[in-house]
Length: 442
Image 1 (cartoon, one colour):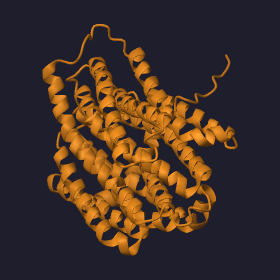
Image 2: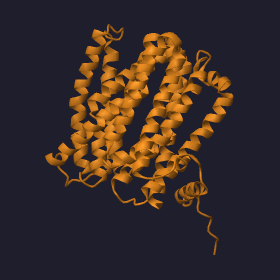
Image 3: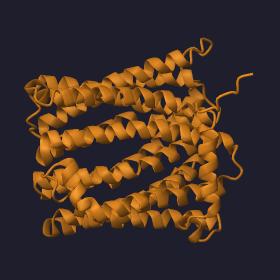
Image 4: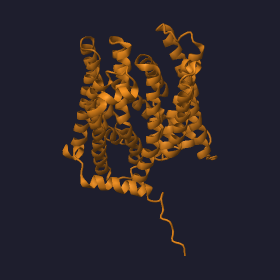
């Protein structure tokens, strides 16, 4: 339990700093380009992310599981991931080029944009793979420090160059290139950190085939998760204005920021649960869910009270619809908050199909709701439909888990005294050695 607490705090601390830099960068881009232009930038990145999801085949999931369970050597898998990045990155780049051509995108003839897109694709693949490899080795600090450093450089560049026409005109290219930089840093750092010279070549074909099969199942789940979380962007872009799209994406991204801690804990718990060393995992899981739910509820309440004034002040006057869109998303955000640890629990037991079924129900509901309501009710309908889809996903996952692990719904909702004690011990175990008392001179 003490080791679990240390790893969770280490991951929360550095991943939290990294995502705080993501938030600052997001705010600066929003203020720099306003709702219409920033919405287009994030919409392009959303489309690229889907291409990358297909290209990766979610190889990081299979790698993380088999390395965490001790069935695969991390360095050998790292070499295979590097090879896959080169091959799959080239195919994804070609697919992106064809997509721009046949959709008659204004970016099709821009050589700089196409080159930066290829760097973005390679960088994101390297980042996903080597982040997962570090996590599988239960190393959470170093990769997040590297990602944080790249983001800080980008933030400084954006602040200092906000009045420079060259940076304004080419910022999206610089933004894409930064992903290539962070991917390369992670790759080099991993091979330096784990120079196991005896582990030559790639993983044995048998275990590699199992990892790929596991990854393909995870890919199915991740495609559905992607569609559940982001396909509403496509519907809003089709049915609503560019300003509505910018407002909706920012409201959605703000909601995703609240899911950072749940996702961090899910990623931390996955290798720990996969190792099979935690006999009290069900008790810890419920405690994590309760704590997460009340943390995010505590963040949402001030935003409900003051967000109508704060959000346009922070992001800019063009984000005048962002507040109400975020409010409508809150029920869905809290549902996903409680879902992350449960999804990690099923994944660690090689039961990703349960996660897939729940996400599929949510996806079908969101598609039907957006197609029926968006043309008539406008962008606010997208928030309502997404919240309803996320809540259905939560209800399904809870029903399956509680059927196999008898418990009351209260066990997941209401904070307990032991939870607060657990948080205190968790923080104390991590930070007690950071500030030692001054020794008394003899």
